[in-house]
Amino acid sequence: MFDAKKMGKKIAFLRQKNKYTQENLAEKLGISSQAVSKWENGNAVPNVTFLVQMADLFHCPVDAILNFESSALYAANFNYEFTILSKAPVAEYSGSKWPKSIMLGSLFTAIKLFFGLEERRNHQNCQMNDDSEYILQSAISSICFGYSYAPPEWIRDSFLIYGLDYENLSQQDFSEEEFIEVARKQIESGYPVIIIPKEYRDVIFAVGYSDQGRVLKGLCFLDGCDDKNIKIDFNQLNQCTGWYRNSCDMLILKPAGKTLSVEQACIKALHNGIRLLLNTEHSGKDKMRGYGMVIYQNWSDLLKEENVKEADQIHCLYPHAFIHYEDKLRIKQFLEMSMNIISGIDKEYLALAVKQYDEIISFAYEIMMIAAQLSTIPKEALKDKRSHIIERLRRSRELEEYALIYMQKALANLSD
Image (cartoon, rainbow, N blue to C red; front, side):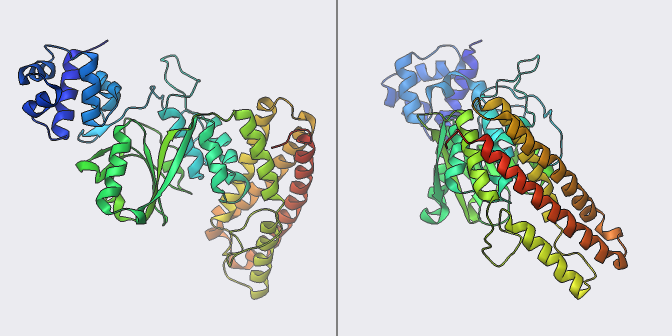
């Protein structure tokens, strides 16, 4: 229901924020200051012409003036300055709570919920946040296929299924004040910003600000941190101070003008995933930061080296055992989803690939449990544990090679 008093409060807030007095604003609009006072007290309502003029003066959409509730969170746990509500109410998290180590999967889930694009609703018509979008985006972004490897062009596909695009701005190209202003204006326009630090820090999905943009308000995500990645609650936002002082990039969200179908995105994700998983070449100094089949060989080599040295610890299990388990789990789940999403796929071959991943996941779980219990394993048993892991990795590689053959056959008639 339209509320003139709430709209009046919003006009007063935006006027003060943009450093206009009632007299200044009245002069800009060619009316009396008494007319502005009546609007702000809720005793009168501006016509469409004045709304458009004020939106231009206040650097905000007309919708932000008309609907006060759409741009303020009175119930949130911080002092209100400027926060934009998600476009539809969001129910409490309803999926399994672990593992959620992939930051991008959770971030894109939050983006979909923010823009009100999730069709699944509970009895109160709130968007339901389950695991499906997380699984889907973990694959479209290629993360689950490649041990935290994701080329930028595949990230764009993750936005395109929502009809969104982005522009990547580097902090080094702006002064501090300019960078803050870009974030502030973007949020005021109704589109959030994503702050991606260069170091291992929280990625901020910012939907509001205070202190003229020096404090961003939003959700925080972090690779490897399940607790942060499962919390998508637009009523309880984090306050991120001094964000502009950390070396970072800013993603500016904007309409794409087109939408990539989920089916086509899944086809592309499978083709891209197969290419990543087939990789046998190593690059870089860290043997565990590659992707594809080379990981199995590198991991086994590191374990063998530790056995030769009779090392008193297994150094190459954390966090790799947990990453390995979740990645293989997400691949399997994505293949199962693809059976229902991709109309022309060969389901029999895809089912055979899923069967291989069932066994790979069981081995990955064993390795992960060894990593979780590492502190309790006697030193004299470490050599046998390493040998056990090496055998599980050897068998997993064989199974994944078969899975890749089946995936290729399933996609034989579908180009990317």
